[in-house]
Length: 506
Image (tube, rainbow, N blue to C red; front, side, top):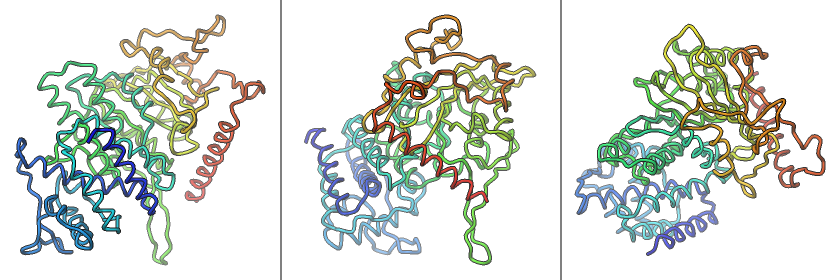
């Protein structure tokens, strides 16, 4: 069976399941469980002979059933009908209690496919292929495709864990990671930054044996507190050749913000979760549900706040080695909010070299109404003088219109930004904006502001823009009606989200 045929059949089954009310997310989970089991079987046979041990079926108390069947692919594929459904459900429950990578893959696992005939079709389809021998690019293409389809499904809410791949690849190109260096993401979602970094390192370097081993086993470190998302991340990484089935998982399940890391990293690339406040739900004595703000008591933070993005920004700074570099996607409020936000910005400018901000347009994220930016900064040793001398800003928002379906963001859209950023030497840059001279082809989207200029702004605001919005004056060059309608919807949804946050805070 050709690669194209495998991909086509997997997609066709996904569509059949969707017609039965099973979303891409549930289908993706089941594919993850079954692929994992199939590859364990393959790795236990020649030429691998890994000897990976799987437990026997367990009862509801977590104890192995005496004389019970093993939790493996060999047994699963012999089942059919009601026996298949029963065995598969018991298998998932049993494996969810295991430790290490195995337990992380099957955490909170459930059988979402109640029709045994359709479950058997998926088992049969996966059983026909030798997945361990298949190229990582093919396996990765299949799995990434499912992840993107799932992100497009508005009802699943998975879009918040899926950063546009064009943006991720651009951020990686700018950071320009080197071999034998560590890369971390404290909210890694489905692993997009890791995969893009892996591909970049493999393509840009002729890696020797030690470098390849380090890339696969020691380069990447992450956190993801949502069990289902962590599962897809681990599987996504493994299918792309990162990590080992029988080793400890590369992705931790703990909340990254609770405590500082025990180690520091060379690079941090991240898109922390959307939503302004960190909160948790409690039930009071009267049985009423209350939302309480979550303030992390971190002595290494500049400010104590319930603002999730400000907390992630502070945490990411603590994750970096003294020479570490970061690229982080953050919403507009981080750039202009007063109080804790102002103090965090001042400290960031003083203690790190905040050298670049990329202003992003709306219409590129699966979560509507998001106005975001990418902050690039380098960590520095303690100093009485501020490390940031000037901040370069690229405005890829004003007069830019993108939609997810008709005009999605592509890597080429950000080529000019990468050229201006100049990854080979960020200290040799040239503005494309001038108050007195004609601008270059990029229409003046690239300019710098000194530390003193920023410090003099109200609340030390980094929400800086200078280009004229043509839609406000040029009625002959308005965007297409579909784009305008999309922007209106995004603005309304963003406003509703803000009102919801205010209401929850009362």
